Image 1 (cartoon, one colour):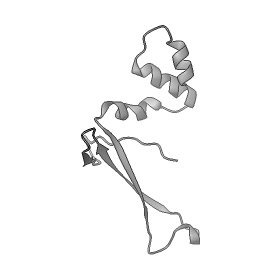
Image 2: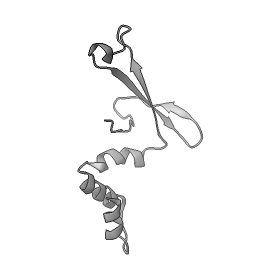
Image 3: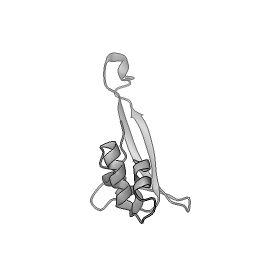
Length: 98
């Protein structure tokens, strides 16, 4: 995606959507939908993932699925972190997980 973007715009001007379109075409994923939050919100996300224990079980040992809780904090260049809340008007980053 990046290679085709650079080749296409080597001697011309490009805008941010041009890069997202090239990456989307190459990956088959809507890159613009994910990257909009990353480039328009101040700071960047600090993601914490913790395993949620269910009744003292370790999950997979008895064929049960394991559960995880994901939270986000916003990291700013000032070194501050602030909680990022889910809800109307919030600025949660979309983070693809597999």
